[in-house]
Length: 102
Image (cartoon, one colour):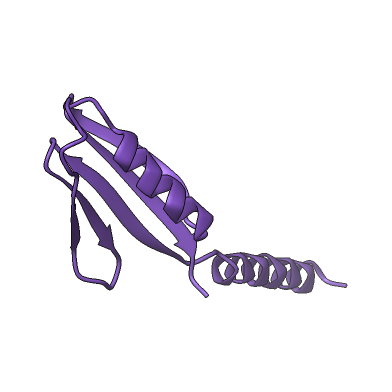
């Protein structure tokens, strides 16, 4: 086999392998759950309107994130996974979640 044919076949196999790998990447949908001070949880799910849930009177402190953790746990049961956690200020915590698209 000539060197030119071997080079062409090798290049074709590498290219085929790379394009197959790109097509095989998983697709995800994303969501975020934010505790907005003492007042509310804000849930943003890709493709859906913003959902705002009041926190209630039992939350007494800005650092009390129990309701936030409960909501994130509920989403994990529904197939979401925690992708990132952001804390821009001491009283705000944002969970970024993702799940594979069907």
